[in-house]
Image 1 (tube, rainbow, N blue to C red):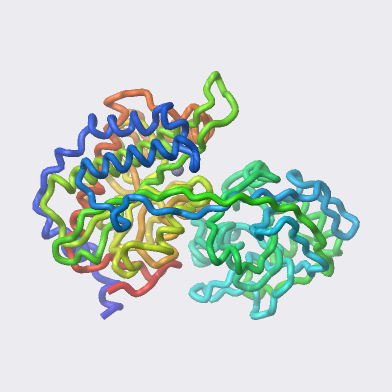
Image 2: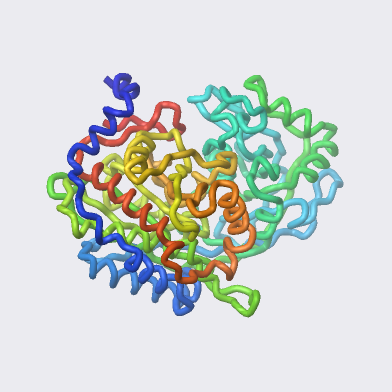
Length: 537
Ligand SMILES: [Zn+2]
């Protein structure tokens, strides 16, 4: 039966979900409604929406007010707010780390953090072992750890996965990064294997960003979820070394980094002890505080314990150094626009006939700090994971007007692709995969904790083909956004009816897709080839 469902033709899958959709009015989704929310959420009065700031208080108050107006029920008992316990930790690294008489400068050659909640964290004589990609993936028949014991060891691993470096489409997902390629996975696997420390060798192509990205966090405070796993962790130090530093480290141990990196591309690879020890002591200070997730829902009429969830993080970066006379990081594209997108979809549900399943609208906190709000929500969910039919997340919506495309980040993972395709076609649009799947964008927003919990989740939007620009100029506009606007004070909203039309289309599209799912008993399924595959129905 499972096998049959897996090979079910797209058309049948789509029929499952759409036959009950009878062309509900989606008038509540309008340019002016979306703009009203966007203008408030991106305004200076919310001072960049940083967790714990007055900006948090104002943002929460606005979202609560809007959810009440729309008629959503509070998601957490009688409250729209879910407290998220966070801890800010600042790790001070020794300026110079010495291994085998070679010196490594903090920030320039290596960077690391410790999430141990004590003032001093020391590692003594921990044997350093090169573990290839640091991947244990039974479904790909790949285990770099070779069942050895890594308790107390310091592991050095490569970023990304073997498919990326070999460009072999039969290895993992070829050029498209799997979750096994993300730094986050490497550190989680190091913890599972009992390693004392984990250092990831940076590679600009493989990571999807330059060395400046991890190194800028050196000795800077970071937020983490203040939960049990933090108290019980075994991996005391996590971080990166630059590729040059890795070459020096391996050479000082009589090994050739590039040759071992090559060997790591094959299943025959075995862990290689470098014969050197890690000795390091770091200073840690920490501060505990609580931020809040916001969520409300419409209760399903037939299966209220099942849900479709829409999400858009509310937090951004707050206030920073003055640039061009501006110090407020308004985060209009990131992520006020997606909140406005989500609220307009809620408005459309309000106007439509009630759905069989519940429909929830979720604005997590601390996405910018590593999806901490959504991670906490998924660990403490209002709906059991198996009862969440689908999640639609949005993030970084560009103001480029109408789009001809719907770009699906993480294309190929689940039946959600074909459901979106049907609705996209009704708008005269086409679906396409993320143009840079090697960057692992699928694992860099709030869908990730849901994926890891086995819930099909999607991050999709008009992105690569703005109608007024065409593909090539859209590419330039996207590049300019990431270079000049993303996570800068320039991420503002300048009112323009034309430029918001793409958000209106995306809201209509994802209302339609979600409405179909919310009125059916079938659960959208994972594709077998996805690393997040679990049996659903
Ligand atoms: Zn964002």
